[in-house]
Amino acid sequence: MEGDSALGCFVGDTMVALASGKSRSFADLAADWEKGITHFGYATNKAGRVVVAPLVEPRLTKRNAPLVRVTLDNGESVRCTPDHLFRLRDGSYRRADQLTAGDSLMPLYRSVSSKAAGDKLDGYERVWMNDREEWVYTHYLADGYNLRHGLDSTENGSVRHHVKSAMMSRQRQPEFGERHSEHMKLRMTDPTTGHLAKIRAGRRNHVETVPRADRVAPQNNVRKLAALKRVSAFLELSDEELGAAYDAERMRTARTGLRFGRLIAHFDGDYSRLRDAARMANHAVVSVEPLDETADVYDLTVDGYHNFALEAGVFVHNSARMARVSEYQALLPLRGKILNVQKASLADTLRNVEIASIVQVLGAGSGRTFDLSTMRYGRVILMADADVDGSHIRTLLITLFARYMRPVIEDGRLFAAMPPLHKITTKGRNPETHFTFTQREMEQKVAQLEKAGKQIVTPVPRFKGLGEMDAEELWDTTMNPATRSVRRITLDDAEAAEAALELLMGEKVEPRRAWLVESSARVDQSAIDI
Image (tube, rainbow, N blue to C red; front, side, top):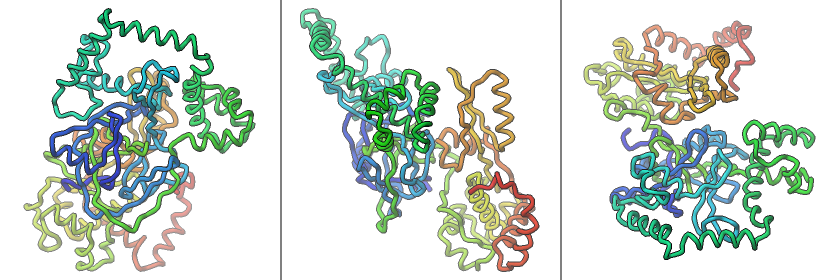
């Protein structure tokens, strides 16, 4: 459990994008961490805005783990465990082995500024802000990190990013940054150097000598790229419908974005060329293939954001274990469904790897030798997705405890987490977040908020699994004793689980067929999870 990521991980030679403009492999990051060196990378907030954040505790998490290869449309490929979560362009997360060709991933776009292209600075790295659709210098992001964490103050002037810069790898030796900051301030304010005058003169000369079309071309290219991303959501529409749908979305989310008439003009009115360009605008998945090989894999943590950027240009999730308090909580990740103990012998049950792990971790034995007084934990909480597969997994686990660790249920120490189905977020400067557990509850909460004058972020997302939550959401809804919703499992529940397994998965076919026929009239076809 400790040292084993609750989610997925990457092979050691996977490169991570650093805010210094360089990249470093997971294996090298882990070695640097052991030496006391902290590197800074990129993360995205809930809106998709890129920020600078420290990469905490890069570490080896699993040995000889199974792998898949995710290939992107920019020619890059990534090898990781099948369960690692990639962040999609809409902000949600999806397992690597559930990605499909064409899925649009949250991208990291970087470029280097050039005065020749009309930029104010020359040779500085910039990052594309996915939410604001504009370039921002990386050192501004570093400045923001320093201010948020009390490492600097606005009283230090306008060249603050050079002090204790979050852009560089840090060994808690800020002397160089401080000296460089003072040097830059002197150069900017000393009239004898003429530094500020030279900058202003250079800008004036650029405006006077470079045609306006050439000066604004880089900005137009950025606007066109943003427009192509917007178009990609409507590629299934006809040519006649595409323009209206695009402009409606532009007015809703980016009123100053490129109008459709100007966008299609870039392609000489050729809708086919426009569609081809839009398909290539995002970092999209080309393929996912399982690999025969295994490898040691690594993970790291990004506090607060819980995602980070790979050098391949996409953002991925870090471990879910940060959603727990390690002093009194432990996570035991399971790989899918355990063995159905209703039909298996005791020998087969104990040979099952997942069941053996549960018995070993609890430390109280099994069957007749089970001793509740020696169990290492005060309670056991079953965490499964709020869908059909999650219900099946929960039923199998309840049956396991009823058969081989029954005193845990009899003593009231087995619980099932009740994760929410929906997350409702309001717009505005002080957004509110509400979690709901049924479709009806979600509709009532939306109506209540709208009646109170609140604007709702639509569509309201529906969680397909616990893995789609970030660490804060997982903590608030499932792990935090003060706010979570859990249900105590009773012996009645255990008997119902055993009966359900016997009916639905037992050897007798006739009772199952009769139940299906009798129950068919009660099925709400619109609610079927396909």
